[in-house]
Image (cartoon, rainbow, N blue to C red; front, side, top):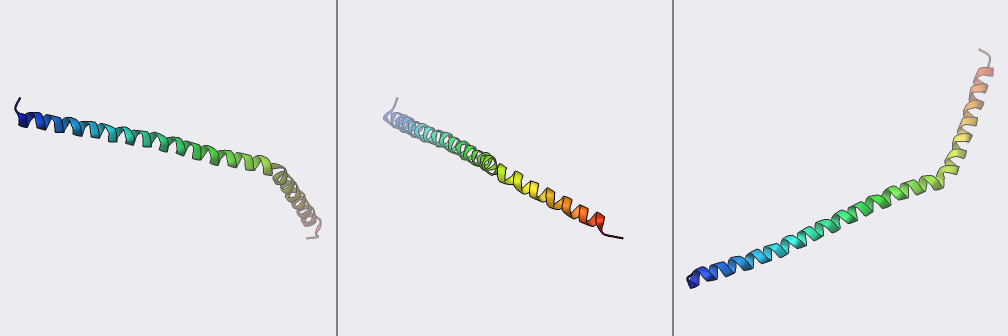
Length: 82
């Protein structure tokens, strides 16, 4: 093997090692990104479910008031002479 070929082979090996390191970093960053994205959606869905659970008594009472008002309006409309 000539010195020129040996130099070329060493440069190629060094570049391959650098590329391998870069690819490993990219893959690690991709995994972290996926984990953060999953955690983000878990927090959003959990907050929505928690908010619904917390607000459910107020929603039920509001629906009850609306239902009573609707029935009062319906009974008033039915009692008016035509």
